[in-house]
Length: 96
Image (cartoon, rainbow, N blue to C red; front, side, top):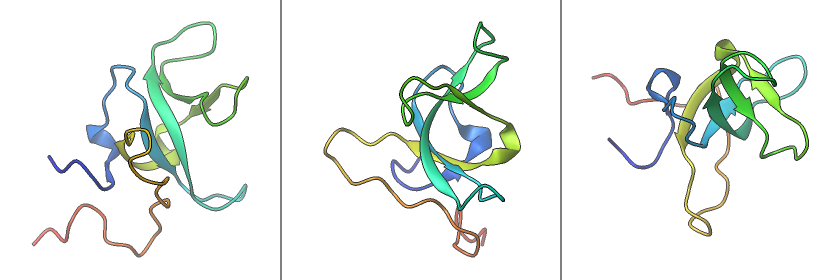
């Protein structure tokens, strides 16, 4: 599997690994990149995608439809934060 680039959410690891995700644009704002991980149900909520890294002291839960795609978290100092995937950009290859 390619080590770079956005990937389908269906292939994201659900073992607690922290990953980058593109959060879909909505009436609250444009698409953005966040750090998230899959979490089991606990005192903070139901099983699902959560983010606490981008907003210290706050835990955000994402519904599956809110997340467009994912990529591995880059190594420290390896690269700047990628731009979110935007509608109209090729995603996952052309399928040819």
